[in-house]
Image (cartoon, rainbow, N blue to C red; front, side, top):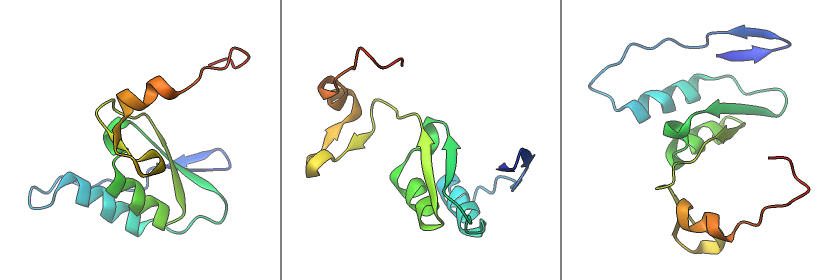
Length: 98
């Protein structure tokens, strides 16, 4: 779905083709998207927060906002670490409301 000025439209409806991986189908959709004229975001669930999918959208100018699975691997400061382990190093701010 694409949203602009309060108007929301379906961008692509793609029938699942078993000859292509689901990741490749999403990457193809990202490649077809027009470049956004302003800062834009790709909102998604945790299945789409994979490096290769997020890379496809960032190449088109879309930042990704989505949940992370606890088994995802991050590389903070170049060190390989699971999200579940990295979460212990995050400091919660008492003044923040989240």
